[in-house]
Image (tube, rainbow, N blue to C red; front, side):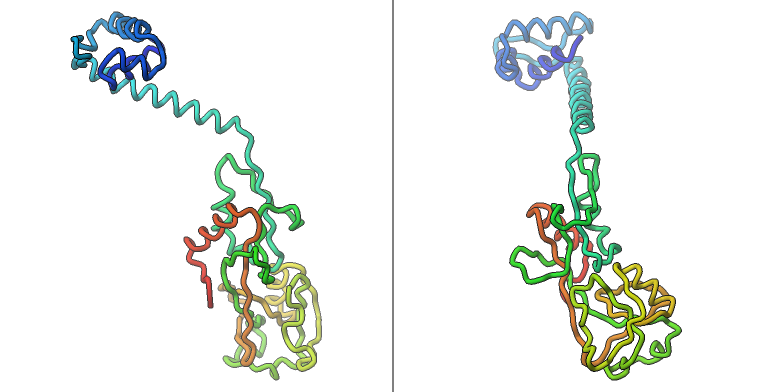
Length: 269
């Protein structure tokens, strides 16, 4: 008993004739007939009633067909599984702008980076990336992912944190943290508030750590953490937002957008 004989038998069972099975398997009729007869001899049971109109499966034939189909399906699944493991993983290079909070990207990582067939790599050079997640710059190739509003962050122990309403004038002469990678480094009117820059940070996690420690204030987009050491406040007369967008391989961009929609991240404010 071999897999070829099982395939010929299943084809005969499903086609209802030796000739139909031969056409389906692209072999001569005697090959199919011999395989079925050999199976009957091995099993010691008649699998078909033969007549001029074709084949009628016996109860033994029906039972054997169910088992034969299951065996062939298992073999096909095993071959597919081995083929997937042997196939080289597709490399997907992802660039994330330093000002985009990684905690918001879990849904995108899952959408494009899961499975043994994908090798997801975070790269530092946008030019090497297949997909880039960056602040929008108005390029027609950009596809929006979500919108973020800029807010003023301060340590919970800062006196300003006790005030529910803040104005630009309240920030005059305040100690500020400069976000070096920010696409809008002068988002606040420096000529008005005359900030004292006490630290510089190249990524958002460093900014949050400095704010939490009480080193200074920072203006950050899309802050949504519930860290008790940090308080976020809107500033009256200061309503600025940005879009985070996807750029790159169209298929990857669409997968990223779908992941954001499924995760129900806000597409507008």
